[in-house]
Amino acid sequence: ALLEEGGPCGTLFNVPAYVGLTIDAVMQETEHAFPWIMPDKKPLHRPLSAAINRLYDVYGKRGDNENEFYSIFKYTKVTGIGNQAGITRRDPSKVLRINGKYYVWYTLRHTKPPKWNNGDDETPSSDWDLSDIGYAVSDDGIHWEEKGIAVARPPKGTVGDRSLATPDVMVAEGKYYLIYQAYTGYYWEESTKYRDAIIAAYPEQDGSSYHWDFCCASMAWADSPEGPWTRLDKPVIDRGNVHEWDNTCIHDPYLIKFNGKYCLYYKSDSHIINDNCLKTSQQGVAFADSPMGPYTKSAYNPVLISGHETFVYPYKDGVVAIATFDGPEKNTCQFSKDGVNFEIKGHLGLIPTAAGPFNPDAFADNGDAQGITWGMCHMRKADGSGFYLARFDCDLSQKNLHPELKKDR
Ligand code: AAL
Image 1 (cartoon, rainbow, N blue to C red):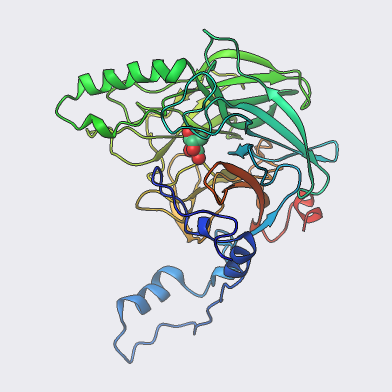
Image 2 (cartoon, rainbow, N blue to C red):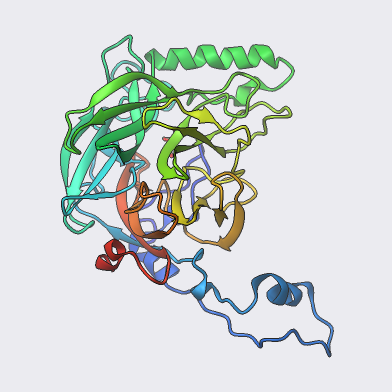
């Protein structure tokens, strides 16, 4: 029964432990979170272990149940954009509420089955190849109606002609913006050229591990969430040069407004080792004064040394980033006052993969963001043929909940 929904772990990426569990099993699994109760003062009359010292010095009386940076996660099957043979839906955007309805955008692929890294004009080379940006609406976040394609791939010869994937959405200055990974060229030809340039610059390092998922992020804008969308057909943020930490890709672009700036968080990795680069998934941020950029990468990048897909939200007067399943700080909830320097505040388990939270104040920039209580994420199909969307619920919010969030509880 445990293998009913999820398949065995893939070989391509680390995948979270719950991939092999049914959604129901994951819900049971995550419903246990025991609080701790302890005396006020550290005992001085007996020897204390390192762990007991940490309990008093680092964690204190505050149990995880009262920690705003801690939550369990529950998972719920959804209708309309859930598990469906032959269709992949993955990497959902944040969820928006517009005129009383929830909207989500995601990678939508309805093609022949992928041949990993070996596709052709009609056969995808990965689960997110030959995709477009789809979207769906819902009254309750559980029953969704797929409305179809929001942004389709452009004609050949244009940035993003091979695949558009992994979108996020922003509302700013009276317009809607979608940002997404844009893959260009047959077999990601452009990417291969770029990979070869890295190999040529570092001949002494093992080029065989350079992966092929090279892309930039591009954008489209619209006056309404229903479109029509106007694609920019050019990068709004591009990979770094061969010597930089983000020399492979701009993945998982995610937009918030913070401290007066449009902030674009993204994941990258380098596959080269030098003073700027290490081989693991990392995340950086870029800032702009206008929604469509230009986005200037922070000189401090990377700002997170762990996590796979970006999972950030404004919180109080700062920004929370959740590091999922890669790197030394995996499974942590981190907080930053300036959006750049993050500190670990909580440890999490069974974190949603590729989460797109319902984030009512993602763009409010009022120094009092309320956090999140649910969102959408993706799950792997049991037969490994693709992914589908599910809902997660959590409590990563202030006690005094945002009216929008309160309504949802
Ligand atoms: C995801 C994301 C990006 C990658 C691929 C599709 O989970 O990290 O979007 O390119 O996998």
